[in-house]
Image (cartoon, rainbow, N blue to C red):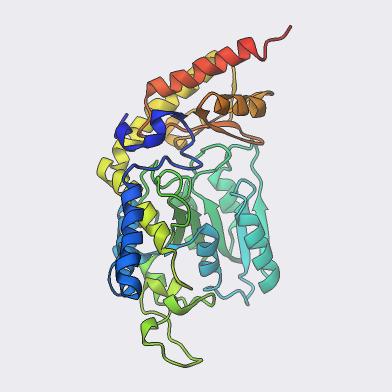
Length: 384
């Protein structure tokens, strides 16, 4: 385990739910206090210095995490907002107006893309999973054709932790003239990701899971050659050129860079809250985090096999993130009992108990989870 002493919740809980909300670093308190102090002492002048700087710092740090050029990332309040920025930038008026998704996407995707498709007259195509764990790249690629404009696809599926081969899909999509938007919320901070290697067009994610940064600090990556070609229609004063000149006009030019994808005022306190978690991930490094994660998830799978639990996650460590899903008839009730005993996991339908050790966890946390699970099976779920 690494940096365990930096995370207060680990003093009182066995925390195995970083796929949902990462543990908060102790120093985040000081970051939020800094935000308050700047507001209290500088007032409006905070915008002229530290509050504008935190936007740049956050963007540069996320760019470092995802191996992207520093001028290709901008803050977003959440993934839905990032998707909206991309969707409003594209031309949906031609025959090329098909949206390709899978039926394993996170739930924010469906209401947004369904509603957007209805509004602009686009066609939405869902590619079904055969096992509820993953969808083969070939099946998705077969659905992406010369009429496809965009494929919004998860990098890691939230119900299983399965990693999708976005590079392979993106290569095919580009041969068809289609674009790919990756949802990296369940990937960033637990597996190494590289925007330039993926050659993906757009990528969204956020801080409150594996980056231990809390809600409200999402991000959008746009491949550099697309930035000046696209003009978001869902925009606002932070997305225009020279917003602080306050020109009275109905004709505005977009910012020349990545900030054209911003709309209204960014969530400054969320960016302060996210800084320490992101810095911790950068300090440790994604390769070390990934190796540690593989060892712990292998242990989770080995112990689950001993108990003959259904494992709804890829067995091959190279094909899964840091989450393992364990399903059995009593899984939902068992989750509540585990939480009552201070072991923090969660439950999702068609998934089971989601168990996610992170860099601050060790083998002892996994053992505590399984020892408690076995005790509950024996003492509270025993067949009489």
